[in-house]
Amino acid sequence: MPSDRVLKTMNAAHRALLRVTRGRIGYAAGDMPVVELTTIGRRSGEPRTVLLTAPVVEGDRYIVVASRGGDDRHPAWFLNLRAEPAVRVSVQGGPTRPMRAEVVGADERPELWARIAGRHRNYAGYQKRTEREIPLVRLSPV
Image 1: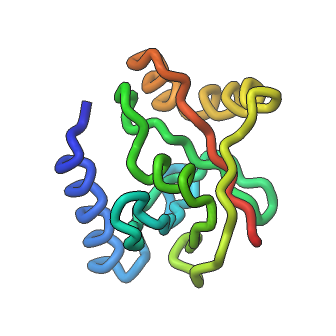
Image 2: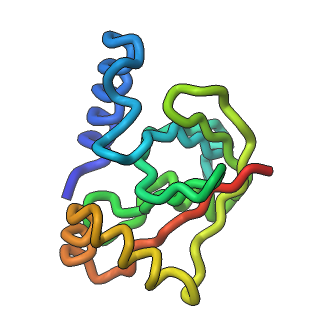
């Protein structure tokens, strides 16, 4: 599984691509928009920002997947938003907006997961690599 250093390097490379291309490349991955999610570090109290894909868009709400590439550990951003669900989100380079993060409940997760894994096989592969149930997070405007 990717180390924290590898994940941070990938995020930095993605940001560099956005800068170099002035946003022409990197704000979409296939048919998924890229969102910039800013959480508050659960230990540091400092803002932490990561670029993520949103495989499901529900109007002005976005579903992101806490896969961490199929690792057995949750990504840091997920742990942060679980501790403090008030987040900030920028979609495809647009303005940053306050949003609320909510872990998708057991009642609706199966249908959403089937949609995501059916259209984006990488997520299905991530779930096969780990024993933990990969959480889905809904980002909704405040």
